[in-house]
Image 1 (cartoon, rainbow, N blue to C red):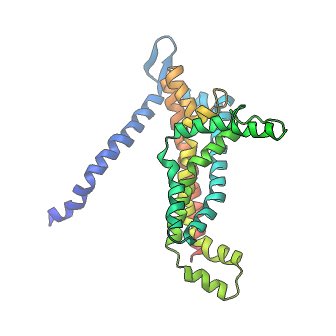
Image 2: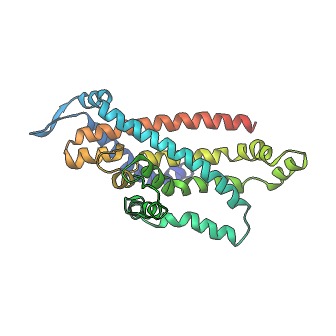
Image 3: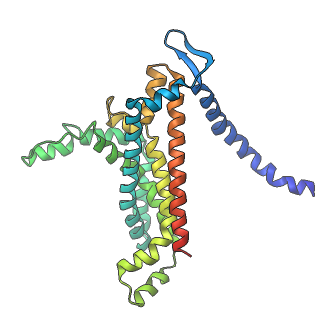
Length: 283
């Protein structure tokens, strides 16, 4: 009887140890590091202090970067919802072989490195890129896209869109098509059927996709670093600079912990609100 009771714990113990070693332990060490004092001449000190946290939360420079990070991540998530949800709905209504072909087209960019895609967008959005060359050929004024927030959002949407489409498409697979057909038979318009029948059913899929997109966008490094330049920093590039350029590891750890806590708070709050509304809509 004891062996049978221990079986579930023995089965999950390898994954638990791996999680503790690769996720929990580094976070604990990062948290401890963030409280170490730092001297520009002597380096990391053994004394503990909260001055790094006070500096980050009271300095407009860091607050501006945090606000930019959360704002661009939220905008990316919103655009992915507006594009990805209809795209997933159309994909779910396709038949073979077109469904498989378009699903491969959606997932295909995930097979290419983020750095490669970022370089591709830098070539398209640059002053001599395809977009500005087309504007010149049409006799129009060129626009500055590279090293702007617009470039970062465009590239983030391109990278994150599959993470929105797949959860919504998976949720739509569980929806009985006859339910929507029954609503149309009873006199509901297509818009009403989508709003009253389909949307509540896929809201949890949209929630999952939104959380994934927001979390990945807020912690993105390659795209802001390549398309935002040195002046237009986001949280991940700021942490990288503190670690690699300034060598101020405690301050970099402090910024990383604050960003992690802020992301968790926003994502958990969003999850609670959307999930509560979805459960009320579904009864």
